[in-house]
Length: 255
Image 1: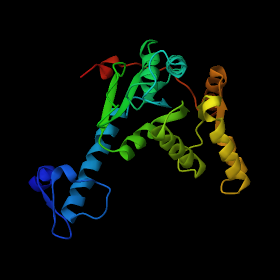
Image 2: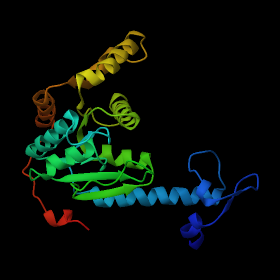
Image 3: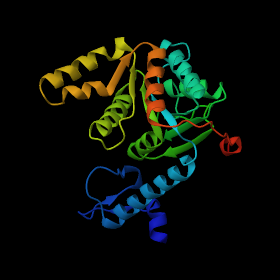
Image 4: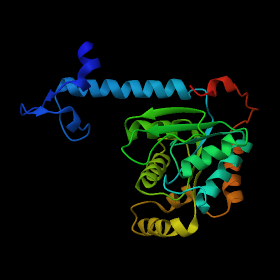
């Protein structure tokens, strides 16, 4: 067990007997010694358990995805803040990636309106740091563990404008719904000007038969916040019985 606990502090020998300095060790760049792979699997397992324990009682959630690069004066930041407010008014928890920009805005909107605000943070060398409006958070080393948590506890997804990370989160969530790996939860793309070219390309994929025409119905593209919230509310009230939330605020005190 001591070997497993301390493996990150050791230099590790690869299959060609080359010493791999700790700072150069990358998790997803091919085969490693089996003891290293076991240690990596153990770290991932611990991250999942920590996430499950912290987030088990926070739901049901609505996850908001979007860029970390918009400041508080940007129209999309303002819209995401309003979404956080509307999510709180619905009685749902607002969940984001926990960072700045759109994530901060949605958490802020929930926090300022008596809602519950959750962040699933990620360790990055730039951009990402936990925003001050998160009441409970979990920080992950890997995107794949983080994305599981952002999807697992949510009943709807709002995708604001964003970059590669947002596209990754959007398409993975959409694929999970398309393949029925998760329930057919509502997915809202907010920002027609930003996302219209993407939806046109999705229509091209449907024409080329790489996706089904029915798959286009899995996403609502809109600029209308009322339409977005009503789309989510209609799904929830149709499929679930909503009970008044009991807020145990002591669970969400800053630690």
